[in-house]
Image (cartoon, rainbow, N blue to C red; front, side, top):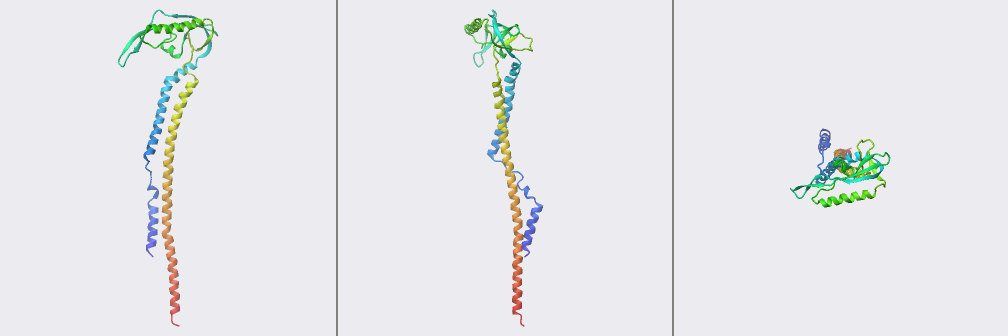
Amino acid sequence: MTAFPASGKKRETDYSDGDPLDVHKRLSSSAGEDRAVLLGFAMMGFSVLMFFLLGTTILKPFMLSAQREESTCTAIHTDIMDHWLDCTFTCGVHCRGQGKYPCLQVLVNLTHSGQKALLHYNEEAVQINPKCFYTPKCHQDRNDLLNSALDIKEFFDHKNGTPFSCFYSPDSQSEDVILIKKYDQMAIFHCLFWPSLTLLGGALIVGMVRLTQHLSLLCEKYSTVVRDEVGGKLPYIEQHQFKLWSMRRSKGRSREIFRLWPN
């Protein structure tokens, strides 16, 4: 009879003194979960890099271009300067050459204000050389560069007096306008959408892996608690059944003794 209570006391003492929740403090992650977390952090880092690169190369010029308003222009005079400008081109891995390109100037008249200004192809052309309409790709063939400039000059000569769309900066005092905007709102949308989608996808991957690990840990803790509670109740049930059996056996013996007792 002493074996069962001792077992029950021992199991109860183990449950109270040693917390079963400490057995599995942290579940070890699998190789697939580690790769998924690494992929998520790599996607988030790549998206931050994309934000930085696109912000410096596209968003900043777009913000400068967004300040320009649309107007109409008429070509007044086109001319190719006699003095060709210097440029540098690459002819191999460790080869660089010097060349020259013609500077085409297009003078236009802003319809809304009557102001004369130099026309440039886009914002990048203004930053590279504010004196010329555009800057061609530098190479050694001077005839090809000259023919390209003559074709553009002929195009504006035919539009002499015909209004066309252009963009000017109302807050700037510089007398320059651009023919087209290099970056429109759709380009800005793609520059912001894809890095944001990559960042969100990486965060979701890491969050889902962490949530799965947390749920697995809670499930393991719950299983341990239930297993210990069920194991602690069994000795008491066995002990109670043994006591009932002992009492029935004692009563049976007492009846047998009274029955056999001589009158």
